[in-house]
Image (cartoon, rainbow, N blue to C red; front, side, top):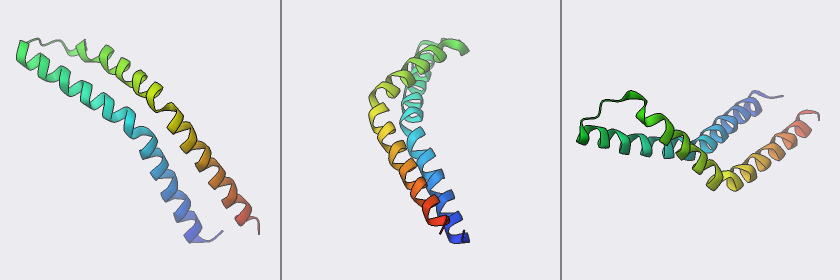
Length: 89
């Protein structure tokens, strides 16, 4: 196993993690910002108000993006298995 292969595996792992988490985090961020603006406009200072909508937003994002996420994870897993085959040589 060469250092270049280790660096490439680490880079691809971080890239996969970021790409798979991005849609969920973006949905949560947008809902959190909308609720914060709503709270600022209406002067509601309830800290727990944002939790339920954020959870629902993440669940909706999971439903929407699950096929893409599963395809990406499957492709990544196949790529890792091909690296294992290269390492054994």
